Length: 131
Image (cartoon, rainbow, N blue to C red; front, side):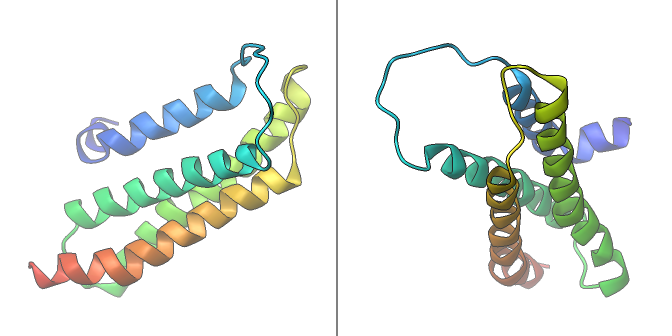
């Protein structure tokens, strides 16, 4: 446990924040709704989560070893998408003030995919050059 706290502090903070924001009851405010604002927030939350996981993984594991890179794919792609699905199911069945939506899950997944593409094709080569 302490290994992950030491190696992935920002990612763990983002995970806890995403879970909290996904289940807390938002206050009622009277402002005009912005079209698809909720989907943009979902995209940014999971894009930020996946991006930070990639960043901390690449920072902590400086290598170009494909077998080890599978851990990043699992941790920064598969796990956030799985977390997203679990949270959407939890919102639907565990709360009375939130609902699970397929479009939220799609926005979450798109955020993870875009963050992964940026991390793998832009960030990873720059980090490997510095080795």
